[in-house]
Length: 314
Image 1 (spheres, rainbow, N blue to C red):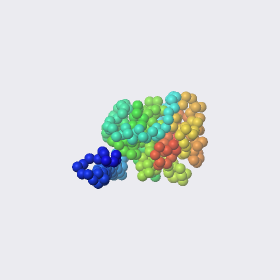
Image 2: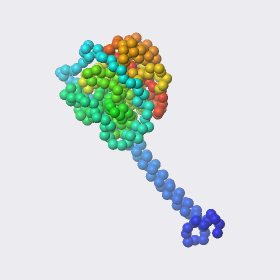
Image 3: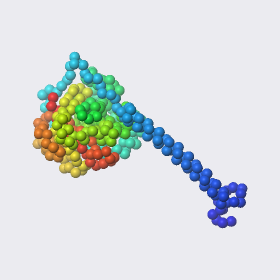
Image 4: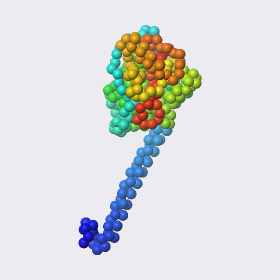
């Protein structure tokens, strides 16, 4: 018997025929497995697409405007004169999305204890959202874009919301999140607040933030609003810049506080010098700063970054 027929099984002497029959049966099994896997992947993609488009990636609707009869806490001159404290530099929080993709398929539990806050101190329009998710720290709105979204923060797991919606379930676009090194409470806030968001191809999250590359768009929308849980805020755009991770001596994504006034000025100047156009806005030392950061384009795992620096003006 030829060697290549010895391992064939069956009660027939026509081994070549038996071999072909077994091979075809094996191929049919493989086809069924691949077909089942393909249908499962297609169904999952459909669910994610519906979640991203119909259900806004797990993001809530914008809260109703605050009634005019309810007093609103606003910044005072005393609160604007902050004490600047140094914090260690860190890497860009959007850099590692692969681990976030895997982690987001686990449980929708929060990865860290929520920020301490008294519900009574939360602005009325945000109390319901805060009850749904105590990771909420504020709400960002920018006219002329699709940005009208909650901002969350998870100290201890900075990238928890990279691939999770506000409801904490998996979402391709994630949720806008404040860097864990930022403090936004009324007591000793950090000099610069840094908010991250994905540059999504469909325009969700920070997908329309890059419109500020156009100076004409900036001139039409020089201000936007970012409310914390405790007070409303209006912000003036200072600079819009493109950069690459690791390319700058003083990267914007390592700026949270400064040791001295001179150090603070160096950090601000390093950002303004890279601005795509001159806004003629010069923040004064002690003014609250806010930086919005996203990828420079919609490619995954890109090293390019687009950022918008703003200063509080109210």
